[in-house]
Length: 116
Image (cartoon, rainbow, N blue to C red):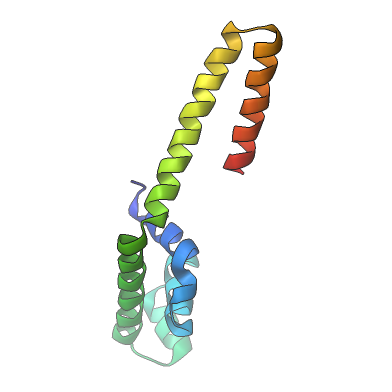
């Protein structure tokens, strides 16, 4: 599983649209723009505790959605599987020749496309 910073970013990328506008804004400002609670509170005209409560509820919503859907977990597993397939294709490419080598190269290209 990725570290907490990466996980929060992935949760936000996958499920951020499910948050309220204020939750999305404060979560993004705090975790992605790296603003402090005090900075967000000052610009929003609410207390630091109010900002923290909104961010905490946003994160709880993101984590609960992930618990129910598992999209981020499956995405990570698929990326890991693609890395492993790439490694095996590289090994296979070094021991094959002719049409088999060409086929391995084509498959490697398709895997690279899937990885984006």
